[in-house]
Structures are given as structure tokens and as C-alpha cells.
Amino acid sequence: MNSKYFILLRIQMYGLFSLNRARFSKDPKEKRRSQGAVAVGCLLAFLLFFYSGLYSAGMASLGLAASLPVTAVLICSVIILILTFLKSSGVLIGLKDYDMVMSLPVKNSDVILSRLTVVYLLNLGICLLVSLPPAITYALSVPGGKAGAVIFILCTLFIPVIPMIISLTLGVLISAVTSRSRKKNIFSLFLSTAVIVLIVVGSMQLQNISADQFKNFGTWLSDIASRFYPPANLAALAVTGTSPGYFLLYALLSVLITFLFVIVVSRFYRRMNTSFLSTRTGRAKNIRLKSSSQAIAMYKREISRYFSCTVYALNSSIGMVLLLVLAIALIFVSPDSLENQTGIPGFQLMLKHALPMIASVLVSLSSTTSAALSIEGRHRWMMYMLPVRAIDIFRAKIAMNLTVILPLLIISIILLGIRMDVTTVGAVFLIIVPVIYALYISVLGMYLNTAFPKYDWKNEQEAVKNSAAVLITIVLGGLSSVIPCILCFIIPKSSYIIMSIATGIVLIITFLLYKKLYSVKLLDK
Image (cartoon, rainbow, N blue to C red; front, top):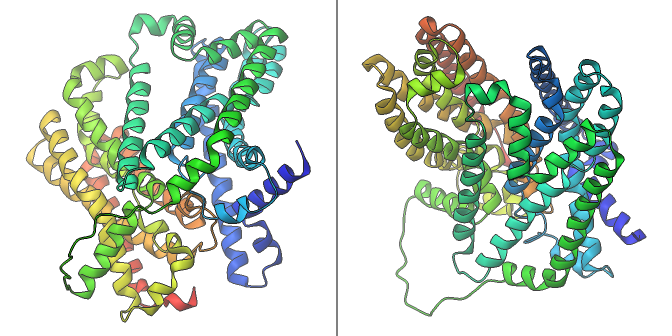
């Protein structure tokens, strides 16, 4: 590795975390935004570490501590596979600063490696948070487990590599296939969504284990790892056998796959980016100009902007896609069989009562507005030049978010209501509660994006996934929906009261935030 690689890497890291701005900015608002982003990141890290610890303690109490290494590897791999694929568009292909970077005296491999390293470091942080509690539990619960725990922590350094390369390979292939299409962004969004659905369905299938399989959980997991993801089994053998040979083989395999990926992508890197960033002309034809109101014109602009950015569309619609997948999956799965699989008495009744909140949790993951201003980037001057009020721009962006949520939500709640045979009162709650949460997450995301805009991004992924507004929206939306959802499972007989209180609070917050949007001036941001 040469100095040019490290220079590119340092620039990437500074841009990703806005370190220079947080360090040298004299604007108090800027410093508060940076502090808020750090606080949200720390909270998310704590929650991930905490839940991993709870899971590890539960496995140990069931006498399944020996299965923790392979379980942790599988869980980390699935998380990395999904998260990396969601942000694969814009990591290597279609960069905003592509022309500037490629004009520098650097090799393709240096550019690719620097960007891979940034993604790897982010994924490594997630893996460490997920893997450390199982490693500690394994060391304390399994005889002679301390040596295995040390090897497991070393294996964690390589866990993100293979799923990361798989996801980025899929992203590069989708970009390569769609780059020659005039509708390449819509085609890319369709293929990306299809891949996400396949990953989620595959993950759900891995969870369908019978009682007999659960008794032999360790054997079952090893079998799953051997058949579907051999590297996980390789890491497990290194830990349980405390053999450095298996660890070295696992590390060598990870490095080799990365090396091959860099070599292949470097060969076609310029050609793929040139093809992806080029604009293809259509046939010359007479176009009849149409006029419309200001509101409709701004709404159409939001739709066009939404489908022009694959990572933006995919990231903001994934919650609704998951809800639709869940609704369709329940058509083929009997509610009685779910109760038998979970082994929880009355689980079917709990699920029926908590259904509106389950839908609301997934609705809370779908916010286009949390990045709607940030995604404008250097073109935000266009908003400033429009002869409209700021609130009219915000309304158009909120309407865009509702357009993403409501059609899939309506289809999903119809399927869920019919399959779960909900009562009339249950049907009313199933409709009203998720719709109120859709309004809430749309307005909340819009307000937070006015408070924490991020315009100086180098690729769209930074605005969509790494901005403070997006992170805070996910945390607040998640807490406001997950907590009532858990309470509905714990106290199903009081679920309607819980949902009424939760939606009432959310509705009041939505109204107050919407009123605050009237006083926001875009030129102040």
C-alpha cells in the first residue's frame, strides 16, 4: 500500500464523519449538530451491544454457549450483507466526485481500496458490537473457552470482508447491467429491491427450526453454516478447536476474495463509471408542454428526484418492502404453526393485537423526508429560486414520503387483516394507527432535516445514510413505535388502550412539528 492510498482514505474518513467541520467550525449550530450526531451514534452502539449481550446470556442459560461463535458469525454476516447492499450504490459506481478523484495521479486500485476500507471499518464496528458479548459469554461459560474467545475476536476482524464483497459485487453487477438502459435508475431500484427480498426471505427460512432441531441447536447451526455459508463454519472450527490453522485459512480466504475483487473491478472501473454517469439521448420527438399548479409541479419534481437516486429510493422504501413481504409470507404460514414454532402460549392472539404496531414499526423505517433536503446537495439553490414558500416545498416532500408509504401499506394491511381474521375494531386500528405513524415519520423526518441538513456530501450515500437527521429519525421513530409494540405483546388485553395513547401522543407531536415548519427559512440553513 502506498501513500496515495492513505491520503485517499484519510479524505474519505474526514468526509464521512465531518471531522474537520466539527473541529474547526466556529458556528455553534454546527458544533451542536456534530455533538447530536455523536450522541445518536453512541446510543445506537449501546443498544446493539446491549441486545447482543441479552441474546448471549439467553443462549448461555439454555446451555447453548458453545454455539455462540457460529451464531454470531451468521448474524454479523446477514447484517453486513443487508446493510452493505443497501449502500452499495454510490460506494464504487456513480460517485459525485468521480471526475475530480480520477483526475488525480492515482491508480484505480487505490481509489477502490480506499473506499472499500471505509465500508470495512464501518462494518467492523458493527461486528465488534455484536461479537464481543458472545465472545465474553463463551469465555466464561465454556470450559477452556478463553483461548477460543481470543481466536474468535481475531476472527471478528475478518467477518465483515466476505459478506461485504458479496454485497458490493451484486451492487457493481446491477450498476453494470443497468448502465446502458435509459431507465437505469428505475431498473436498478427494481433489481436491488428483488435482491433485498431474496436476502430477507432466505434469512426467514433459516429461522424456521423445529423443536427437535432446537434441542440440537449447535449441530443444526453448524449444518446450516456448512451448507449456506462455509466461512462461518470455518471460523467456528477455529474457535472451538482453538486451531490457528483454521483461523489462518479463514483470514487467507477473506484476503484472497478481496484481492480478486479489487483486481477485477479495477480493470473495468473507468468504463463502468463512464457508462453509468453518461446521459443517453432519446429519439427526437415533439413534446406537448403541460402546465400545472405550483403544488403539483413541486410534487412531480420530488418524484423525479426520488427515482433518480437508487440508494435514496431503496433506503427509504425498505421498511414498506419488508412489511409487504411479511404480509405475503403470512398467507402461506398458518398462525397456528407460528404459535407452535415459537412455543409461546397465546402467541397468535398477541400477534393479532399487536399487528397495527408491527406495521407501524416498519412504517417508521420509511422516511424519505429525513434526507429530502440533504439530497439536493449543490443544487439546493433551485429551491431558493422558486417563487413559493418554504412550507410549500416541505409539503411536496412530505407528500412524496406518503406516496412511498401508503400504497404498499394499504395492500399489506388488507392482506394482514384477512389472514389474521381481525375484528371490526381491530381492522379500524389496523388502518388508523399505521397511517398516523406514516404522517408522524414524514413530518418528523422533514423537521429534523431542516435542523440537521447535510449538503456537502461527495456521494449520495452520505446524505441518505450517514447524516444526523436520518439517524435521529430512525431512533425517535423506532422508539415511539417499538415500545408500544412490545407493550402490546406483553399486555395484549390492553393493546387498544396502549395504541390509543401512543397514537394520540404521536399525533400531537406531528401537529406541533408541522406548525414549527411554518417558521423555518431555507436560506438560514
